[in-house]
Structure formats: structure tokens, C-alpha cells
Image (tube, rainbow, N blue to C red; front, top):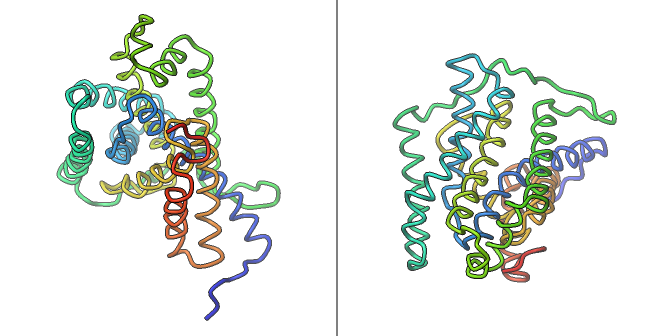
Length: 294
């Protein structure tokens, strides 16, 4: 049996395009995680479960009120922004300055709690939005791509651009950056670092809320859905660099393409193996990532 399979050129081009589009979604999911780490040097192990809550929010808006996921994007963003702020004030602020293990187990325990609660409340069944506004294929440069994936990718890219503009061009965003650079110096300059931390968690939640709403148009919703995306987000942040939001975009595209190319050249079952091997390589060769500062 051949170890490598050479796909036809049209399939290869289609795969690369699909990987780039999916990479934009990965980048948006990872942006919130990277932002939180850049601010507080805390890894949110419940980030994937935040995405799961965003997807369930969009799904229940559709199931209960016939609201298409495209219309529920602002609701998901606001809901997850609130979840992020609540988690900060309810859990994270209490363990700031504590041992590293306390910080790890706090978010890891939160992830288990959210996942188990979703299974208890909504059962482990797979659910799907059956009649979304965006559905079916679309032709791009002669290549057939799923329209929901195209819309989700463009929306993720637009949200990412808005996030980057907010961080680099607004007074509040500059205060966030200053807090990430040196929280003591930022506090001496009159910046309320506690509020900046809460804002960072809120923005991180809002990012996965937006991504979750768009993912429901072409992905099943179930309690464990955040696990895979969460792992990919950690790899994306590690490759792009902890604390680097632009690095998350570059890394997201690389991982999206690597995932697809590994599936085409080796086998679909090995696509995540290639991604996690990349993660191990980054940790060993360049622990700070492509554009990281830690």
C-alpha cells in the first residue's frame, strides 16, 4: 500500500481553498484564547466549551424561535461575552496570583462542568440546523465549495479584522495592549487592569460566540463538539505565538491547509495526526511560536 496518494490537480486546488477558508474560522476561535493568554498568561482550557455554548445558543434560537444562525450571531456574541465576563469575576479573579496548578485545574474543571451540564440538559444527541439560509455549493474560480463554509470564513475574517482594529486603533484596545505588556505599569498609568481582564475574557467569549453561530450552518451540535476545535485552537495559538492575535490568523490558515493536505496525501484519518505533530515540532524547535513574545 502506498504511503502517499497524489490527488488530481482539481481536487488538490479544491482542498487548499477549503483549508484556507476553514483556517479563517480556526483563527477566530484561537484569537480569543491568544488574547486571554496575552493579557493574563492563563490558558483557558474551557475555550472549546465556550464554543460549544455558542453553537447551542445559535441552535436553540433556530429551534425555539425559527431564527436563522446568521441572525443569531449578535445574540451568540453577546451571550458568550457575558459568559466570559462572568467566568472572570466568578472564578478567574479569585485564583489570580495563586499557584499555576490552581489556574490550570480551575479552567479544566470548568470545561468538564460545562460539558457535563450540556449532556445533562440537552442529551448527547447530535443536532443540526436543517434549513439554514446559506446552504449548498457555490462555484469559486471554477471550484465547487460549500456556501456555508465560505460565508463562515468570510465572516470570521471580517470579525478578525474588526478585532485587530479594536485592539490597535481604539483607546480601550490600546489599554488592553498596555495591560498585556506590563500590568503594573498600566495600573500606574491609571488603567483599570481588573476591568481590562474582564473585557479580555468577554472578547474571547464573543469571538467563539460568532464562530459558533456560523459553524452551526454546516457542523453538528453536540456536547463534545468543543473538544476538537479546542485542541486545534491550542495548536493554532502555540504555532502563531501565545499572546499574538495576528499570529493566530497566520497559524489558523497554516493548520487549515495542513489538515486538508494530510487528509488528501495520506488519509483523512491522519489529518489531525499531522496537525499535532506540527504542534510537537513547534514546542521543541520554537516554543514562542511564529510571532509570539513568550
